[in-house]
Amino acid sequence: MMQDNTTKHTDIKSDGWIGRIPAFMRPYVLLARLDRPIGIWLLLLPGWWAIALASGGVLSFNAYDIRLIALFGAGAIVMRAAGCVVNDLWDRKLDAKVARTQARPLASGDVRPWQAALFLSALLFAGLLILLRMPLVTVLLGFLAVPLIGIYPLMKRITWWPQLFLGIIFSFGVPMGWSAVTGLVDFPAFLLYTGAIFWTLGYDTIYAHQDKEDDLRAGIKSTALRLGPDSRRWVAGFYAAAWFFMAWAFMAAEAGWLSLALLTAAGAHFLSQTKRWDMNDPASSLTAFRSNRNAGFLVLLAAAL
Image (cartoon, rainbow, N blue to C red; front, side):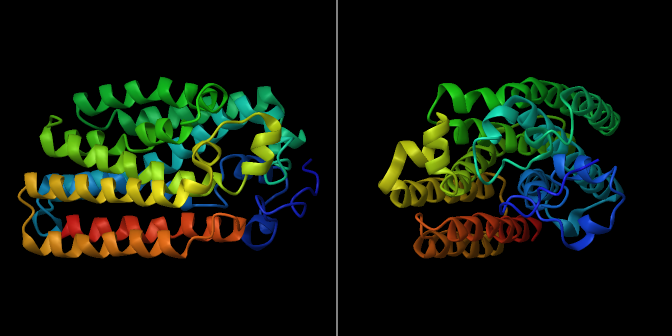
């Protein structure tokens, strides 16, 4: 049975709907981070950008495009959960040393590694069923992403740039979404993928600033520690590069002036987010990180129109 560890830090909350589900389910819901859907949105939105841009916008959507939107939504929920399980299996000992993560189900012992492995198998099987409903090239890209998910947690042990590796993985929805619509991955998709990688590098650097003191003690590497007091300037640069490649992708896809005009709203969001972020305040870092869901929706709006 799950212990009442959820009040010890800010990473897990036991109030709201989490407190109303059966006790035996609660550790697995928390292990999958279903209580924090921000990660689902950040994984899902690049795929939706690609579907919208490759199909010519919502006014050009057909039944197949709408089906893809639904499949990518379901896939993001399942694969984000699988990624969280993989991450926590790797990091259960490290998580126990970090205040924000020490009550996670694996770190606290509420879920045993073998139970997490069974749960992961079920999630991957569900993801496979979703993936097999897509074109062959998209299926192949999906299989390519799986080993990257498996080795991502290793990156924080061997490089100061695990956030860059996360960007490579979290942005995989772009080539998958583009290929699902067009049957190939062409130049605009590569540009959009690059933009999504820089976007992830920016917001995950912000996120990493929550844990920099604990990470330093635990020997965990991150861009927050590598960039230190220069992080604001670097994040601004990452966001500028993200917007540049997104705009280039839109132009390469002949998205039109209205889409480019709407994309400036996302650029303004990036600028405002960077200026208001206090890197020495964990609450400010969390708020800035979470605001990227809104930034992602602004990009989606530009792609959809």
